[in-house]
Length: 99
Image (cartoon, rainbow, N blue to C red; front, side, top):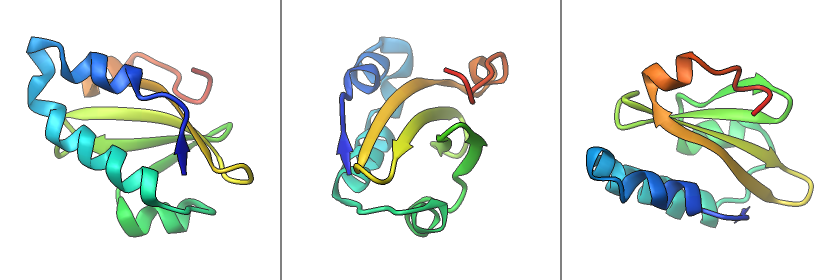
């Protein structure tokens, strides 16, 4: 898969408050970049707790669900767009199918 930009990931884990997420987010990035996912079932092989929330938006639990990562995945062209990375509490305030 091609991750169009991982700027949001870097900005998040380079923040002192969230630097503990660095290893987990870098692991997600490495796995996703090497993957050739075609559907949710293939994603779940690598990340079993992934959820589809509609409108091509997928939610990944990071660090035992302490953090959430929301991405848009365009399977046909193989692109991933990072839409949100934050705490579970911040995630609960968002409509993640539209961000």
